[in-house]
Amino acid sequence: MAADIIIEAKNLSKSFGKFKAVEGLSFAINHGDVYGFLGQNGAGKSTTMRMLLGLIFPDEGSVYIKGEKFGNRSRHLLKHVGAVIERPDLYKYLSGWDNLRMFARLSGVPITTNRLHEVLEIVGLKGREQDKVKGYSQGMKQRLGIAIAMVHNPDLLVLDEPTNGLDPQGIYEMRMLIQRLSKDFGKTILISSHLLHEIEQIATRMIIINRGKKIVEGDVSTLLSPEDTNINVRVGNTDILARLQATQWANSLKNTTDGELQFRMNPSNIPALNKWLVEQGVPVYEINASHSLEAYFLSLTNEDNAKA
Amino acid sequence: MLRLELYKIFKRPRTYISFAIITAFALVIQLALVADGKNFISFALQAVNEQFDIRGNILNGYLVTYIILQSLLVQIPLLVALVAGDVLAGEANMGTMRLLLTKPVSRTRLVLVKYAASVCYALMLITWLAIIALALSVSIFGAGDLINLKSDSFVIILKDDVLWRYVAAFGFAALAMSTVSALALFLSSFADNAIGPIMGTMGVIVVLMIFTTLDLPIFNTISRYLFTTHMIGWKGFFDDPVPYAAIIRSAVILAIYTVLFVGATIWWFNKKDIQS
Image (cartoon, rainbow over the protein chains, first blue to last red):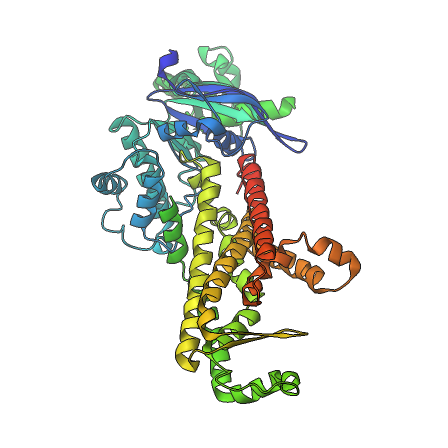
């Protein structure tokens, strides 16, 4: 429903010289979405995000924020948006508190001191706010960047690669924070990451772009259907192939390699498949199911690259 | 927003380098003149003393201030450019421009605030120069009539008639430094690193000053339109009578250049893609 759309890109195109970074890209983000924005390096993700925020001007197309056309003359609409683009670059010679206070004053909304303390609490920086930013770890900078993005309580948070440069603990904490922002604070989130596993765990909707164009967009649960789960079975031998072709499993079999059978099917079929293999006297050493966004992403982008 | 910009400028240690340089420069000249002022004066007045007998406290605070100002003609614009050249390019270099421009602030307002902040800095620098050069020199050397030596003549300004001229001269210098700030801001809008705009500003000023000072007919034609020619309009306040018409013309030309540089910065910055 149009009233629920927080931000919408309509037919965005941008070229740098002869290079077409983004071409005819359209999508809409609804209230409450955690919207994954995926693409290989150079696919046009950052350019698109910058166009959404008015950092880069599109050659063609428009951006609408809460139904209003966004441009240089309507920058007030940015009060509905908070963003961390690429890296949370901050004033390193100032304290975290000074950085937060300074950007809060530019947010177009009156911000109380209590609110500053509140967002520091949310992102887990309470007690470190008086330290100079140059002494912060990458994770702390990312969290301060998110505090700055959300301090004015915007409807939409745009997070471009928020887990970049973080260690596994930092990535986990960032994921928890983003999930909390969505579930507890009702934020709509547009997030790009090359860590597809992360997106898979937090996104409700997603778009995949390649060479500046949309390949697919939709609900994560629909796009990543259980029927497309990859099931790899490591067996003692593959002599079973001839018998397998005559069974219900033949349609699901996608590939065989030395000692491994690869199926694409619903994981609920694993027990029955395992039982059948054992009954056929085939030793089964390992079965793993990987329903990965990564596999889905790679299959789509490789297919698209092959067409080019 | 202006307060935030000034806060950022004055929280950076390098901002104070300019103040330290001016202080050091003024102190060196003052100390040198304390130590060897008499020789300097007799050398400077060598040609004059052949025809005139000049007596009194010639090496006074007003003359020392004039010597300091003459010596800082090139350095002050450089010190102003250190900050003005950094206000846009420095944000791009630090990556904070991205964050700034995701806030609901118009780009035009951002440019104007940054310009206003760099002008405030220039004004503070000029004020500091006035304190360290004028106030300190007068307290060390005392007040007296000011002898303004020129290439083909000299002007003596009576002691009671000097102070207002310095106030006016510092005011004019502030206007000239506003123009330098505008040039540095303009160059800063093209760059993602402050070195380029700072060096660029100095390059433009040095080259144009060469046009101004070289006494060649081709340069004489264009030099009257160059802002560098008019930056030294403050010297007019130490002539007798004061050439008000020329000073006003210089001030108007500097103001026109300022408006052009700031206007061009706004135009360019409003269409610039932020890719840093």
